[in-house]
Each structure stands twice: as C-alpha cells, then as structure tokens.
Image (cartoon, rainbow, N blue to C red; front, side, top):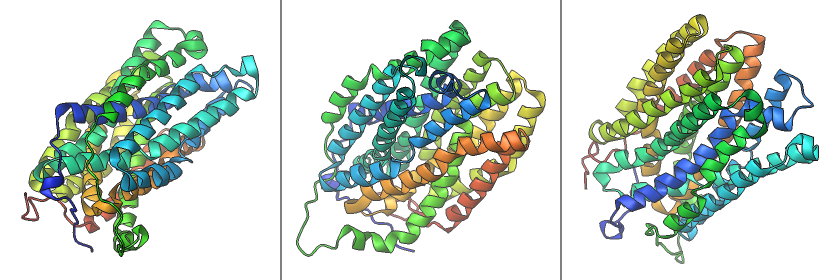
Length: 430
C-alpha cells in the first residue's frame, strides 16, 4: 500500500475562516438539496411529466429520470475535478455551483406534459444531465479545499462537513416536503407544489456564487518541466482508488436507500404523505448531528476504527430495522428504525472521504476524488432506487434491507484493507 501523501506545506495553508466554511457548506448543501428533492417528489414529478404511463410505471419513469442525472457525473468529475487541479479549487467550485443553479431553475420552470407534450420529459432529462455534470465536479474540489485549509489534526472534523452539508440538504428538503405535504393536496403537489420546493433552493444561487468567488485558493502549484503526468502520478494509487470505489459504493447505496424512504413509505407502506416526508427530517437531524462527531473522533482514534466498528453494526441491524418498519407500519417504527440506521451510517461512512482525500497527492487530489466519487455515485447511486423499486414489486418490502446489507458488507472489506491516514495515529499531528 502506498504511503499517505500530504502535499501541503504549512506556509501554503490559508487561514480557514467561518465564512469560508459557510461558502463551501452552503454551496454543497444547495447542490444536494436540489438533487435530492427530485427523489423526494418523484411520485408527483412522474404525474407531471409521465402521465401517459399509468400507476407504478409513471413512478418508475420518474425514478429512471432521477437516475439519468447520474450518467453525467463521471464526465463532470473528470472535467471540473481536473480543472480544480489545473487552475485551482475556487474556480472549479464556482463553475459547479453555477451549472447546478441553471439546472434546478430550468427543471422547476419546465412546462408539464399536458402543456408541451413529449418536449417536457425531454427537457427534464436535459436539466437532470446538467445537474449531474455539475454535481460530479463538486465533491472533489470542495473536499480538497476543506482538507487543505484545515489544520492537519482537525482534518477529520472539517472533512466531515462535506457529508454534513449534504445531509443538511436532506433536512432542508425534508422540512420543505413535510410542510408542503401538510398544506397542499395531492393535486396541488402535482401541479405546482414540487416546483415550489425546487425554487426555494434556487433563491440562494446568486449569493452562493458570490461567496464562492471570494474563497481563498489552496492550490497554487504550476506545471513544471519534467514533472510526471497526472496519469503517471495516479498509477501508484490505483489500489486505493479500487478501495475507494468499494467504500463509496456501499455508502452511496445506503444513502440512496435512506433517500428512498419517503417514496417507500408512501408507495410501499401506504402511509400518509406528511408522515412519509417527515422521515427526511429525522434522517437529516441524525446525520448532521453524528457526522461531525464521527469526524471529530476520527481525528483522535483514527479513520479505520470508526469506519469498521459502526459499519459492522450497520450490517447487523439493517434487516431487523426494516422488518420492524414493514411489519408495524407506524410513525414510531418508521422514524425510530430510520434514525438508528442513519446514525450508524453517519458514524461509519464519514471518515471514508477524509481518508481518500488525505491519501491522494495534492497535484491530482481534486480530480482523483471527483472521478472516484462520481463513478461510485453514477454506477450505484443512480441505479439504487430503481433497483429496489423493481425488487420490492417482485419480492417483498424487505428488499431494500438486503440490498443495503450486501453493499455495505463489500464496503467493509475495503475499509479493513485501507491503511490508516489520521495524522495523530501516524505520529504526525502537525
């Protein structure tokens, strides 16, 4: 296994101010808010753009359109992530945020099938492709920025903000969805309610662009004659990339199974919409509470102990948790079991992105993380919700639990094989 490569000289590290963290966090949260809101309102979006498909086929087409956004994630990871290594983290983050803003506004304003026919689903697919491209290039530069600007002994905590801000989006989308589901009828949600949810997020697009433009730069390295190419520099880290793909695939499948809980509660368990949307608030609160806790303790005890211990507990408890949910179908069962699995996932998965980022050398860091992350999300995240819907229809409501358990078991193998990267555990806290 390759050694951990820092690549950050103390003199190069800018002072990380609260407003800098807020700029990265706000942009990251907005991007994931918009992306995940599509999942939460999949039923209503399906009725708007795919009314020609009846019943469950309309939902399947909507979920497939959600999955289309994952196809361009690898391309975004390659283009924007590599841009983050060549010309800096800041311009890459500004570009990804701007493109996501265009995508979400366009999606929210696309006329329905009833108004413009087949042009409506075509436009929705195009905007989803743009969103996927933007989001594919978001994670690498923003994570690299947080890791490079943070004090080495606090990288786990600052790196955890990457996932915490994603799940702040879960919480925000859950609150918006619950409020709208409580105030609006199904007809209103289908006609314009889901559009309102997207436009709430779009409001901060201009503020986010300005905030990111004012970030300090953490990567100033210029190309020099005789330097190895990026492909040559990446070659010793191929095994790390494989482990990263395995770990991120498990975490992605678990995350998108959780993201499906609203649709699962409405479509499979036939629970009321307001209760079903409320589960996202539970998931969001649990995630944003325990992810920074995981990051903090990974700085003290190391990345691997957190990943492995809580990952094993997640694998052992997922099937029983879903059995309780699908058997009792009550608010208490749904919320408590979803909370338990989300806490374990948050504690286990958070150090993964930190460990991967610490391992990669600075000159290829943003691009490498973007590409690994984007491929994991594109292959496994984009397919998860359609797969579990297909499996539920043909087997039982327990299908999501078995799928999650199998995926995270594979991730655990990679977690065991990864080397420790926490500076304190390596005897290099400075």
